[in-house]
Each structure stands twice: as C-alpha cells, then as structure tokens.
Length: 497
Image (cartoon, rainbow, N blue to C red; front, side):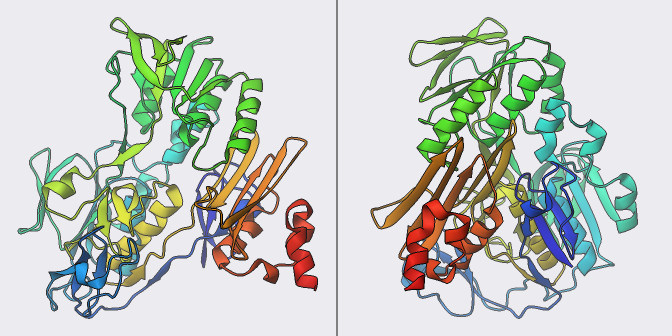
C-alpha cells in the first residue's frame, strides 16, 4: 500500500492509487503525489550519538562523522552525546508508549506504534478537548464549507478499537530520570518511550495594543469559534500577515460578507513561495475579489480602548478594524523539552529516526527540528509521526526529508511552488513567461531544474516536482519543451543535437 499526499491541502491517503478527488479540498487526482516513508519492523544495535557543536545536528554511529550534513562543520566539532551501549528503541521491552499532542503527528505516531506493537499500552495526551481534527480545514470551517463534525479525523470508536487511551489534559513537566510525564490534574504517566508531538503556537509580534479585545489568532478549533461569534455582514477585518494562512483566512471571511484587508511586511504576497512578479499578480487578483492588500507595510500599533478599533501602520495610515487576526507564523512548543534538558535549537533537535538527545524520547511534527529544518506542514507532520511511532515501538524507520513544495487554491486561484525559487547568486538561470493571467517560472543551475513556480494554471505541477526532486540534468527530459515551450526550447534544441 502506498501513501499519497494532496499537494493542495496536505490530506494523506493510503492506497495503491490516489483517490479520484481529495475528500478535504476537492482537488483532482493529479494533485496527489507519493509521500515516501520508510518504516519496517527491525531491531537496532546499540549506537553512539555525536552532536554537532555548531548546529546541534545528531549523528548516530559508532564513528565520528567527517562533516556535518546541515552546517558543513568538520568532524572534530562533534562531541559524543551518549556512550555506545546505551539502550535505544528496539533494545529493551517497550510496554508503555506516551504521545504528547493530538495533532496529525501525534495521532499518526500513536497509530503506527499500535501497528508495530499490538500489546503496548499507548496513551495519547492532548490539551485540546476535541479528538484529533483536520487543523488544515479551519479556514474552510470559517468559510462555512464544512461543519465542526466534519473536522474529526477518527471517531471515538476507532480509538477504542485500536486500544489507544486519549486524555484531554495539559502536560506540565517531564521527569527523564523516572521516565514520567506529570499532568496538570496531578497524575503521572510512566513511559518506556515518549513521543513529543505537542505542535506549535501562533507568533504574535509585540506591537502595542495586541492584548485588546478583538485581536485573535487562528490555530485551534476554539480560535475558529471565537472568530465565528464575531462575524456579521460588513464587519471590518484586518489580517496581519500575507502568508498562506493569512490569505486563506481572508478568502474565507470575504465569503462570509466581511470587509477584509491584508497587511504584509514584505514587498509582495507569499514571499517564500512566489517571486515578486507572481506575488504582484496574486495581489491584483485578490483585490479584484474584494480584498484590500497592503504590501511593504508594517504595523505600529493596534488602536482602540478595551476593544480594537483600528490598525495603525508605520506609514501613518490607519485601517479601521472591528476584528484583527494575526497570522504571522508559529513557534514550536518546546518549553517542556527545554525544561527537561533536551537539545533544543529552534525546535527539538532529532535525527532521521526522530530520536532526540535522550534515546527514550522522540519528537515529530511542528515541535521538531530535523537537519536544521522546521517544516510546519501537514505532510511532514504525518511522515514524521509514522517514523516516530515506528521507532518508539522498536521498529526501524527513517525520515528522509521533504522538498519544499506548495500547491494551494486561494479564491479559485491555482498556485504551485517547489524547490529553490530565490536565486542565491548569478549561477542560477531563470526562465519566465507570462500571458493571459498565467505565469510560469523555472529555475535552473548547472543544467538541473532546482525550482519552479506556476500561477493561474498548475498543469504539469506533478511532473515538475518529480524533475526537481530527481536531481537529473534537464537534457534527460526532452518532453519539457513540449510541456513548456516558452521556457525550455533551449534544452530541447541542445538535447536534439
């Protein structure tokens, strides 16, 4: 059985073939791609753990590495973290597995741990009361496309059948010496393996007035409920942040009759996914749909009395607002890990098996940092959860990483972005074409395609992603000239000579 991911919303489908359409966002079959996850049941021999003194990358081997794959530090900058012979998953009888976090990483880790170990006691701890739900669908909930009941990933019956105990309570500390998790209600949960999948929290910049009533974030189902209670036709909403969440939120609220403005500090929208030219095209299209977009603007203050009444920009412009939604990114919930003395950089540092600096503790999803990368996306959380659950139960699994890829639909606008789209130097050649509201760009270096952007028409997105991830020369893909004649005719001519 294969694992497929929807490139539009991140939904995961298991089966020999992808579904005809995505049950979450409605994307067609061609929007699904293979999600590579390597997991099998096998015991591990004891290993040594070496830690990079520069970036904290963990290398598990009896030999000191020659070079760090993350920051290129030389091997002499690595120091031993554990002596050979320290028990690691697979070396001892694992009877109690505790998973902290009810997001996709935590749910998947618990499910995979059960698949690997039918007899282990598995407990899933979540500070949220609902059962695990599709967080990626919160904007669709705001738009009125779905109900809260449709957010649920698995029903109560599934957890009973799997023998996974769910506890809705906050974890307050981890005792690594006693291998216990302390809960807010006074209980202690013993563990042989602990998986930290406790996610991330919204980042709220410290501008004045941010604590006023009417300033919200969108991360949980409770956040969505708070926003829904305030929605009335004509309500003035300002979304601070022009990233994916900010635009999806703006689009959802416009459909509910709100008057919406988006403030983005960068010169264009989706600065990480789109070049300036495509970002400007997106801005024009959103403005035509009734969303006011202000790029290159930063917030000075949220004005008002007890409730927010407006957003004052550094330029002096005042945007009237009855509701302000901050969508300025997230930060890992790494407090418990730091308190417990685990190695934490930006997130909890893990190796390819999702093992932290403590061999009995693993981390997955938004809280984890793998090879210097914080993914913060649904497919990565799913894949890391599978690996963490497998490893925690004594199996063998590795996370190889995911290529940065984005495929979204904002107010019926199709976008695709993959790989490196911001050239670091003159060695990268950029092939661009724009016509009739459609923009295409491919980025090549040393004869290889390293990045691509499609705006307005995402036909061929799956093929482009495969080419970028293959690392092969463009001359090996003569069909590129037929699929994108305005961009790659030079490659076709070179290949035919």
